[in-house]
View 1 (spheres, rainbow, N blue to C red):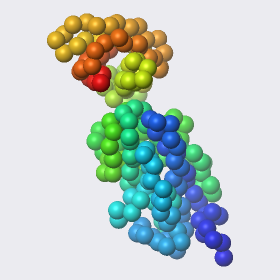
View 2 (tube, rainbow, N blue to C red; view 1 turned 90 degrees about the vertical axis):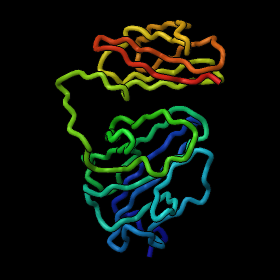
View 3 (tube, one colour; view 1 turned 90 degrees about the horizontal axis):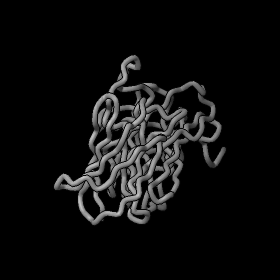
View 4 (tube, helix red, strand yellow; view 1 turned 120 degrees about the horizontal axis):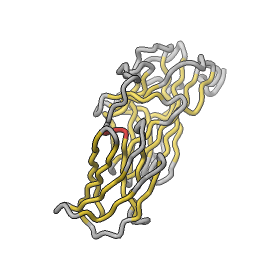
Length: 231
């Protein structure tokens, strides 16, 4: 009798990287003796909650391993994310064990109702400090059939966050096209900085006072404006 009954059974490992650089791995295991509720011996509770962390949520219990009976591609699994400082959260598929390697795994964001497949590319989102217990799910089906024929301007495809230590605005561009330019404005409409990002990830050094600012991204398809705060 193994002390960890899930190891020889199917297992999906998912990894969280926090804004502070902390990592957490959580796993979904399949065992015919387990259920969708709490199962002693199949569910492993989270014992050491970090300042920034990720965990499964089952009946308000925080778990690092969740055991369920069998694989079902219609099942959805809620997880929580804790963030201490505003910044980029990354969630990716770490590994499969005894599972068809072609199984698609998605992170579903209930706030935007969008799904991101994490088999090859990580799910990335900029979050403010807080605990997000009812927003994200792991699923095995996409919530939308996206049209890939037409290039569309989607606000979610550009993310920004301000790094207080570096005095820099970080930009992550997931658009299918280049950004022509970025104009930074303060709340009274003064243009305080301009930049011409050329890659997917850029940082713009800003020498500005604390306050609320707008970053206007200019592309062939139009403009996207993002708000950020300098403390």
